Every structure is written in C-alpha cells, then in structure tokens.
Image (cartoon, rainbow, N blue to C red; front, side):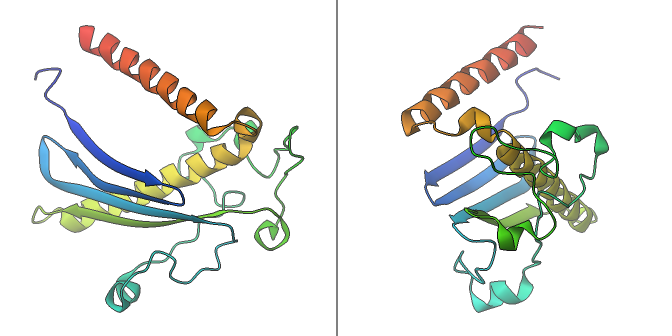
Length: 184
C-alpha cells in the first residue's frame, strides 16, 4: 500500500454568507460523494427554507437541529469542560455561559444552515454507510460549532486579513504534518 495511494479531493466555493462544498470524494472509494451546502443567517434557526430547496427536497429532507449547549457529544472522548458552552464565559465579549432557552434570549446570534447529501452507491452497504456519514457529520458539526463559540476570545476582533493569514498558517502546519507522516 503506497503512502500516496489515498487522495482526497475537496472542492470548496466560499462566498459569505453562502459556502458550497461542491464535491468531497476519495480516490480509493470512487462511489463515495459528500456534498455540504451551508448558509449563515443572523437568526436563531427560524428560517424555513433559506437554502432554497425545491418542494420535493423539502418533503424528503430530514431536519435536525443542533444545540451547541445542550446536545451531548456522541463520543465523550471529545468532551472538554473548557469547550462546553454551558460553562464558558468570554472575557472579550461577555457572552456565555449558555443557559436553557439561550436561542430565544441571547443576541447577537447566528445560525449555520447546512444541507448534507451523502452518496455511497454500493449495493448492500449504501444505506448503512450513508447513515453513518450523516451521524458522523452531525458529530463533527456539533463539536466544531461548540469550539467556534468557546474559542471566541481567540478570533474575536480579527480582520479578514488576519483570518486569511491564520488560514495560511494552519494550512502550512497541516502540510508539514502530512509531509512528516509521508516521510516516515
């Protein structure tokens, strides 16, 4: 098994407030595809169809609300008290901790709407794999959005130029880690 045999393709289009990951595929699993469409709105999750779904898509979608404060992480190994919005209080903004009913009381608030499509066209495995992907993505989103809230003091006040520099730094660090892994 060659170290470069695994190739992951991610195509992302970014334009605030809409981000579209067009294709997320894997070289050794050609029948796997994940598409995530995201839109951010300044509300508490009250938009019915901000992603512009067709009537058919609205009828077949499975709607899940993710509460960053009160939904439990499926893997408790990821739990960190300092990343729990029920206990976190921002020094810079004074936001937090989040209490029961926070979505209707706290301001400002932003909602991240996501449409996740997973496709794994392998007979006998399709439903199980697609369900696993959906559950896994929900877990990643819950953890990531909890971290976005509890890490606010690290990013609050950054300019767009600061954000882009931070992204370049993290990309370089990731590439170095991958290179070190590849060299071993």
